[in-house]
Amino acid sequence: MDRKIFRAAIVLGLLSVIGPFAIDMYLPTLPSIAKSLSADTAAVQASIMSFMLATAFFSLVYGPVSDMIGRKPPLYFGIALYVVGAVGCAVAQNIEWLVAFRFVQGVGACASFSLPRAIVRDNYTGVEATQLFSLLMLVFSISPILAPSFGSLVVQFADWRGIFWVMSAAGVLALVLAVFGLKETRPKEARVESSVGAALAGYWTLIRDGRFLGLSLIGGFGMSSFMAFIGSSSFVYQDHYGLSPTLYSIAFSVNAVGFFGASQLTGTMVKRFGLNRVVRYSVWGFTAAMVLLLAIFLAGIDSLVVLATLMFIAFAFLGLVLPTTGVLAMEENGKFAGTASALMGTLQTVSGAVVMGIVAHFFNGTAMPMVVGFAGCAVMAFILTQLTIRGDSPPIEGPIEVPAE
Image (cartoon, rainbow, N blue to C red):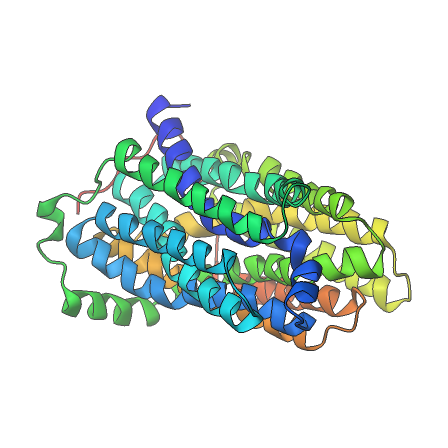
């Protein structure tokens, strides 16, 4: 593994993780937040959805701006706003205040969501990009493993507000890392053709590109299944299955182990089988596991063991889907990588928020609405794969150079 790629993955991964950390870390405390602020389940889940919707729509701003003025200034602004939002959440006196400041926090976090993909595309494509995306997935996956457990640890010494103070501190550390650990990858000469008009033209080009949209939404519906899990799992695992916050954190984290373990195989598998085939087979495995899970629950078997096992398998396949679809979607859009990354992030986040909202609307205290959401997302990803990816890309040998722009 090239040391330069590994170092870039660590820096970009740590910057990327503050957003997911802001979701995963406070999941074990959702029931206690509901009690503290006298709010119902749907209102507390709205604090997750407001964060996600903010990251979705404001990514459309950060991406083109980063094409015009460089990657680092928007990143600085976004992380600083993230800290402001976290502080506002920490001192929230009611659920409306919490939801509003979660939105502010999301507006800031979307810079660290969308810009790392553009930074990767600035420097890499092909196998090297796949390897870097896979390493980003590894660092990214640390969040679901550590964040809920860390959140449970924090509430041993403080209430749920302490978690947002920790997020504030993490934001400050991320800002320091962005300033001193990241180089500007969008030089001035590359910004000459970037403007508001060019950004709008770029968006118009992308929304007419069926392959880009299809690949983005394959990954989007894959992520949506995980968002459905994030929105409901705290209530299902703790209230329905009776797990403690600590046991819930462990159960939640297990899924991420399969995800990041499989994601590290993508570079090797792409070299051997090609990107298209890896995507198709991975989506097939993801769909098979989720549909089987739904069939078992429809048969009346409401088992935590079955749920956890098949989710582990499905999310392992998802660990192969996300890096490969991301590389394929970005590969032909290097001239406006920030814009392409922003639109991809928006499509994926909006789909995740919509699915989370639907599952939350039908939530009945059991795992069934969540399982139905899983299967629906998997089937949509499967259909889009059949429509988008035709034929096999050849296996790739050796590194691939970034094409001249």
